[in-house]
Length: 63
Image (cartoon, rainbow, N blue to C red):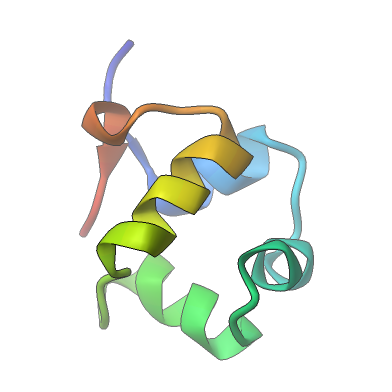
């Protein structure tokens, strides 16, 4: 599987930024910041992202 952006992974999982933020227990602005590459999620959050979005870490392209 080719690498996809964090935003694409979220969209492919059928989640809005709001729904993803709720599942990850972070703010919407945090999700937006990750997707824009302004900040980077910590390891536990990356593991949650992979589980929630249904992708492996190797397939996510972090800007």
